[in-house]
Image: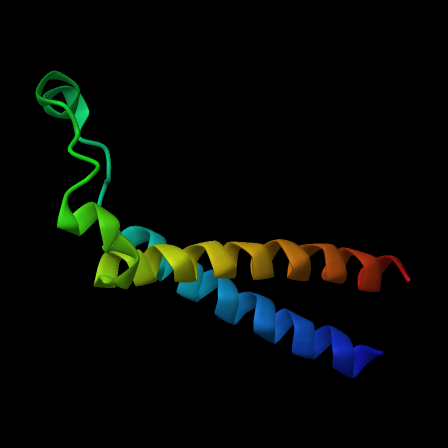
Length: 82
């Protein structure tokens, strides 16, 4: 059981560091006041293919790592209670 704890902690630390890196590298998405005044063009080519860009892939990876982070947090909590 001790080996499992150490493996989970190592994975947790790696996920935390990668998640911190990804979040800090992402840019802010909102258009701000200019997007409200000018109207956000949701039907342009970039908006339709946003998931295939570097930013889209980083956003998807961030979401996946956030879910992994939450699962590891719950798992570590259960392992340390038992």
